[in-house]
Image (tube, rainbow, N blue to C red; front, side, top):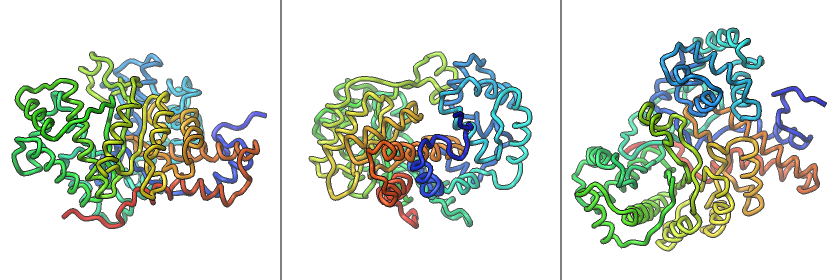
Length: 474
């Protein structure tokens, strides 16, 4: 029997799954604990002149498949008219069956704009008109879309040198109840061999208010910024560990390495590893003290095309999955933090699904402190947040850990329309549990199952992150 595409029971393949989704998951609110939304655009309740601006500006997920479909760059990141860019996307979408973007595109059209037609070059003109008329009306600004999606917390991604001014202004808004909180992303502090380090250090000096001449000064400045973020409601850090390294070092050694980096602009790979390791352990002590959650995003291989990086810069769709050995350095890093009495709540993600057993088993080695799911094997990330990737992540977590304590989905997106991805995830979760029930591998106990679904959709994250109800910068 053929099932209608994207009907109310989309991706729900059992009576149990249907019941769990419609009675439990469907109306759950969202905690978006990792995304790349702009706090400025949230503050300004940014509106969109058309669907191209809302959909295609800055979305490298779509850019990649458009290129793979043979679309010229002028219709992707170039100077083509917005309608022509929309038509290029409309020509691409029918070719994407099997890709999550096919589902996400039509979910967004349905949920936000009431558009049930499939997007194609033929339907593009009427969809363009219908959606744009709504975008020009009331209720489609950035904050409106967040509210419609029932998002209670948004954690943006912020550099330590950010003044968090937009976050402060958002807190003063009337009629907007979503907490928009900063996340501490100190990647530039760790990458002392990159050309960005010295210019960034000058920015850090500016917000710290004192000269940074030594590694001791550097650590004091980082601590000041962590506490500044905490006062602004920050309870999450985020680290891009494209390559995981660990090397034992004393502070005296790292003092010398830091001085060498300032003087010569370059240190050896071993010295760089010592700087990264010692600095991460230092930061982990602050995170643990302040009851933060620390996130490690592992194994992205970035800016692969030199020519396109020169033309477009980073985050434009030219990244891919990295490989390499992570088990020993990752465990050594977590062990050093624990040995220092300072392993905070930690979420481990990898862009490479081959790393999943490593992450799930490493997490099990460091669960402690009476915190349920203290070390999390994080949700399927980036290239893995499709149906198979999400199922595999949840099944492996269930096999090797405690699925019921999972903190669930995040958007990792720059788009205010991307919250339908949570619906996608919720449906897959209910379908997975429903399949186990139908196959006799889990009990048909709706009270038990409903509690698990509620936890993974919302309450686990609410308890895990312990975000403040009221925040203020001192």
